[in-house]
Image (cartoon, rainbow, N blue to C red; front, top):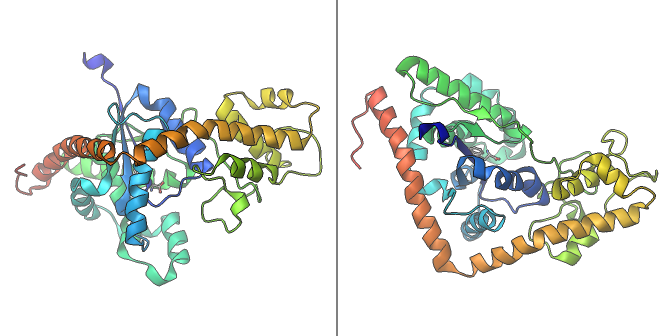
Length: 336
Ligand code: TRP
């Protein structure tokens, strides 16, 4: 039997995200495509979100909403363990222990720490600094084999591997060393207004970003207004034609057609028609997800049931690793 034991996949998103089309095509849809091949854990990373000040009522709602969106997008909460990071105390416990195996110097070199501390100058807290250690704990607790991550998280995965190797060198094989997932990776969706920039929920121009919960008319309107170029050719060339290439990328990620097939499909058509077609395709893709999302959010008992069951399932796996760590470092045994 052990031959067909599936490898473990771990990923998650911060609980504060108002998800954008970029989060969906770059990560979530990719997870849905992968989830049958792995035993999966998907965290709602609410502890990480506390590194930035949150409005409590909104935060609580967003975290539940993210859970519901994972499910609505196609991750079955029975086949997959979808859970709240803050509900499994082993994350914070292991993070503390790993803090003692992580150096100030390596954390100071994290580009995300540098960026975020520049952005939140008034609140450069210790959590922001040790953010990667908590992320290492997330991943290592589940003996993860693969982590699908975007480019911006690559450095965090590298430090996770460094910490795990350092620990294993001292105590023996405690942690599986996780690999980044570089298979058929998700799409990189750019701003519809400034296609040189990544699509971001914090963009000041609302037309730049398509939200996962935008209604059909809004989606199509945003695509109609998408920036293209003065040429007329629908061709993938992110350097010379970033706007058009971004639309091709989006269309391709949803339809599964490659760039050449997309160009061929729209050969001889104008940008106007192309933009509407992409908008409609996106709206069609998101409609069933939005419907399912509304159903889940309106059924509190159903959602609570999934949350309770999966918190327990995550805790079982996580505490197994934490128990091992306790024994290795010489902390007294965990009695659970
Ligand atoms: N830091 C990740 C992000 O902002 C979220 C995250 C936290 C994560 N812990 C993780 C992703 C563990 C993958 C694995 O996108």
